[in-house]
Image (cartoon, rainbow, N blue to C red; front, side):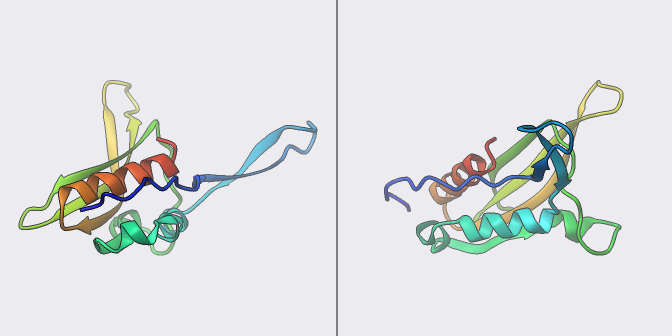
Length: 137
């Protein structure tokens, strides 16, 4: 169980920006990153103190479940959620999901982006907080 001092994460951007072509001092979105790029940045940004208690680093679930081969663009979203869940058999999983409004505006759609596994609940919550802070959600 982690009792170490909290390590502030580096912010992870979901999109890249460039200078606006006609408005000096303004930015315009260049592109949305792929889910793979975001997951790689999450794993690279996890401090060793958090990684040492993980069964597995975050995996790109969006790419694994996609009908499209290759990289998947990080989806448009209203919210990003990072939270632990109890495993069916043992351990805890940290889920990274996007939540977006349905087209009819009557509900939300959740999309699994990534997950990781740890063995105890306190570690799961600490990692979820760290990743949530890095993604500014």
